Image 1 (cartoon, each protein chain N blue to C red):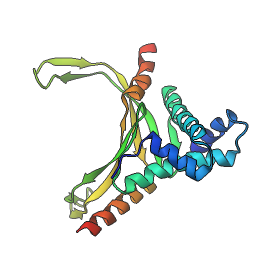
Image 2: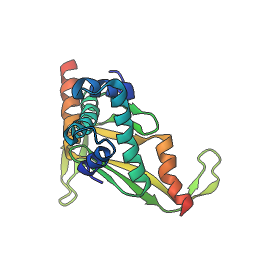
Image 3: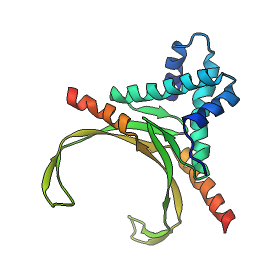
Length: 97
Length: 104
């Protein structure tokens, strides 16, 4: 499912709202998560999961093709940890199968 | 830095979109629920510019209880994975690098 399909499905349940408003809602949700993370913040959505930022220290890496040493700068990467309820729900398909 | 939760997101929807707080809460919940139920169905959810949520099958393997050293069979299971998009990675990395640089 893509973002636009998600928007259309939500819109189908809300005939009183314009698609462009649903688009704004969905976009706002992800934009806010992004800007919170960009400032080092944590986003916690109970039952869904938590987004946070991990720090990767600078290290000396290797070009796998040539074997040359290259400096890799320190960087920050976004991370998602699945919430308990969501983990249970995705895994429950396994029990049914 | 404060943690962003449902309440914070609802407040943003209220001020950006012009829906009431209760409508904002309902819509937020529906968006999350739609993502969860899609994943539950085994389908991935791709949010362009943000990232992809997908479900991965893990086969059964022999693990070890780290405390007792006992061998245990880890049953096959489904795990959820989130892959951030390059855009999200860039904005997090650039935002944090700037923030850290300011502090020094």
